[in-house]
Amino acid sequence: MNKIISLCKQRGFIFAGSEIYGGLANSWDFGPLGVQMKKNIKDFWWKKMVEERGDMVGMDGGIILNPKVLEAAGHVEGFVDFLVEDKETHKRYRADHLLEEILGEPILGMSMEDMNKLIKEKGIKSPEGNELTEVKKFNTMFQTHIGAIEGEGSVVYLRPETAQSIFVNFKNVAQTSRKKLPFGIAQIGKAFRNEITTGNFIFRTFEFEQMEIEYFIEEKDWQEVFENWLATMKNWAKEVGIDLERVHDLEVAKEDLAHYSKRTVDLEFDFPFGRKELWGLAYRTDFDLKRHQEASGQSLEYIDPADNKNQFIPHVVEPTFGVERTMLAILDSAYTEEEVGGEIRVVMKFAKQIVPYQVAVLPLMKKEPLGGKAKEIFEKLLKNYRVEYDETGSIGKRYRRQDEIGTTFCITVDFDSVKNGTLTVRDRDTMKQDIIKIEELESYLAEKMKN
Image (cartoon, rainbow, N blue to C red):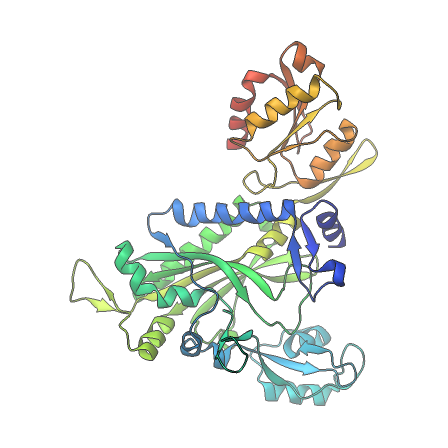
């Protein structure tokens, strides 16, 4: 994990947030390569989940919602974690995580009272060896105010998930898109959770991005739809370069289900710090639409276009993907160390649709006429590919740098390029080099990018 974090900083993927001021608890900023990689992940997700499907549409809801939305959804009351505090250091811990770590076994469906009893019976201390406070509930939603002066305006919350704006807009989307069941509404956006315990790099942070779908169905179809989405999620994992051998299904126990879920499967990934949740798939039944209909007094029933008398509240299957966790799983899957000529080569074996740069153009030397010819090729490729131009350092060092940032192909422009019109194209994974004509380059790359 430390190697990945170091590489991410050195090569411009991810930086510590507010670093020159000492940072901010588990806040991270995405550098030039990181922001491009995040964009590639989101774009590819949207392409596969929305643009290539006839049963999907998209929307983009606001981060701040009317607080009545979150009250109706049960979040104001139920979006809580259990908190304990070290009496000496005042450091806070999630009670269930702390107990699981100390006891070495999962704490399934344990109430706050049972946790308090267990801590007393076992004499459990904080990691610093100090007494712990009583377990108490902690609402993980960030609270803020609407109004010029705090206290004069209304209390509102930053959304803890993107789902609710989809539910409250269900009628609008159904009527304007004229979609028939089953159909889904997709959204990519920021969500915020005031986590008690953060850490493990970008795995658990206060602000994060979700790629989320609410797929509306008839109740009788939920099991088939659920299994189809589970298969779709695994297939997408493979396409973005996540190692499927490290992906595992966890059937969430009934007592641990969220208040809205009848069935949830977590797709877990073997991170360097342990097996943790990557994505989630939940069958939310008709809970959300029914609650919003009751609370708002507005009908959220679906009207079957083929039979206007057939009106009902649809059920929902929800696939949820975290952007940062997806990126971390990709980074971890891609990180490879290989021995080449007695030295260790670090190479990030990113999938071609996710890699920050697909192509790097490298003049053999920083001199003319090589620079001019290389710039000419670089500018031409920019129209169709993500391309970097790199002329600093020896060609060997530049190859190693491109390996570390995952660039799929390196194109070397040498004196033969000027004299004979040929280029050397190096494959990242095999290090095999092909000599091709300049006029063949775009068709060569197009063919390679397909496979």
